[in-house]
Length: 408
Image (cartoon, rainbow, N blue to C red; front, side, top):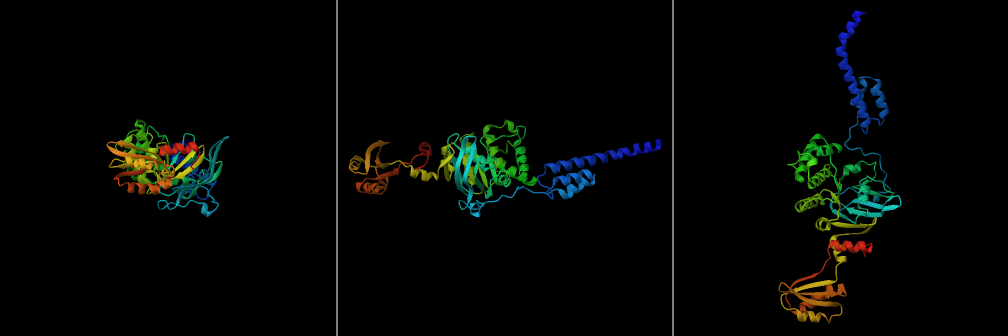
């Protein structure tokens, strides 16, 4: 009996490592089954039984045969009602639809945050989404990115039906929230590596894309510093970088320049202008001058309802003031007096600004003034140095549309 006991004690140092190895493999395999989105055959319970019941061989069988690799889990197949309703993948600027909604509605109790939104955004443009606080802008972004379920209606982004279960939406989209959140103990480079892991990029892709984006947003020198020590503007630029990590087809940006100084704003707007070559930008902002500088198309929303969609130039023409301004090289008093006799003009006045005569006149009939006023100027014999119809700024148009409750 003593000899057998000594034999067991002699073998024990060899058995313990094998036991620890077996236990470690089993725990690793079980955790992998639980966390993995897909396993071969689709039944996780069977693989758990195999791992536990077949000892060392079970974990090895699972690790070799059971794991199913996929860069993106597309989730359940989504049925689209009809091919014509599906937004096709974007290829060329403005040629196809990147974002499409039909009757999209969201209610929180008795509050209707979004009311029957019908919207189409062409591909590879910068779309400015404007509205006062509480208008429904953030709700729209949450619905389009799959972070909220609509009460009614449907939406498609980059050809995919939007659903919280459709992970392809996250693969096709990038999101910059109003106030980006970070792990303060990470460095900027570590955070981008972490985002790359979330998108299932390879290690080589993560490294190359991280360095590319750090250079793009001018954070290369600060990439090794803790994010907790970044300024608000630096965090905003890091937020832009993480939103671009997966090379999105559609990029949602909520107040992208709100925390930046004038130089930073100019750089980010230039970046947004370049990004539309490869992505559609859906930009929600209250800085209307930014919209005038970079947006190809503008949508104005208030109280959950879409009021108008147009280009900035189209809105300026639609809401153009009926005032014409003319600068002359000579004294224009006689010409101003002659305009008082024209029935489709009113209130002609002449002022001198910096030594130059300036005539202002309001048109009673704008279309006729556009046609006939140049002829009257030509017949006057005066030397014209400037002639323009006064155009309102986007801020004035925005206030007017929201105040009226819709575009006229």
